Image (cartoon, rainbow, N blue to C red):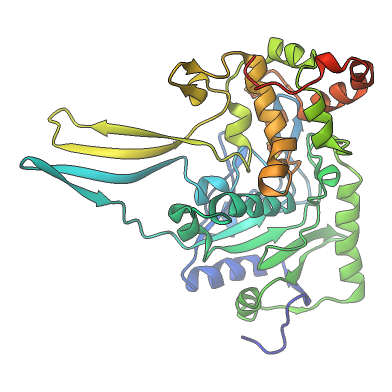
Length: 392
Ligand code: SF4
Ligand code: SF4
């Protein structure tokens, strides 16, 4: 490691230096994953060079709406989060857990022995760092550690990017998860494109980050450059497309299991599960066994699942959440209330994906607001406010 570089130091790399950063990571054995334009969206996929980044693209987002638009300044990271999140790399949507082969009158089990990819994630936003920290608790923080997640997570190198513009559905400021990356990164970039200059102020988060940075051209960040980076984050914080009042939110939702708003949202919700698929913290899965036609070979697969699917809560006597009302309430109350009891943190990081990608534009911030604004009326009638089993 270069002895001159310390954790929390800030340096500058020029726009041209980003290719050097990617090459240094590749030379260190990392597989690069980052933002690319595909199918009319900015998604996360493998990167080969800086040319793969979405230079000069931005997005416009609102409830049920997502559009790409060209921007004039050639910024590499001038967009908000898209439909993908990093969970698809750490907790893959489909994973084979084991396979089995018939041998005589018995069968032999072969556990899956995947060599976990050594990822470098390029362009991780602050809300996404919080989402990764949340999933770390879910998959590695308890008695039972998820070996697939742990193997992929333990060596991941994280290049964060402080947001230079908020999306129309972002509310990280309300959730205290952004827009500035505070922790959980190896390097954090702030992109500055102004006065004909294009450079990045880089904050070092770990010794691993310092080691990579030492391999590429950089210089110390001056006062003016650090100030410019601070202004980028301040400007973004002032542009949030949404807000959510989180005051006593757990108690608010616990008091309102029977609020009529659940019927209102159920009349609009398609139970399509999009919101859970795009959410960077949702972690539910199911397990499926498959056999070939000869019966000689069987496999067990884990797949993402969703509390919006009626079969997800199927027990011996049927689904315990047969109605849309009960499933939407389960999802939102878990995100914003029971998650706090379970993991000590909110299950929502304010990324806005569930709002943007909901086909009927259901908005979690609006649902909380609606319950909060009408709950004083309901609080006067405790008979209708008590918790139930969540089944209706
Ligand atoms: S809230 Fe929207 S995205 Fe989520 S299940 Fe309902 S319709 Fe689908
Ligand atoms: S609930 Fe919605 S806004 Fe919150 S983290 Fe999940 S997708 Fe993002």
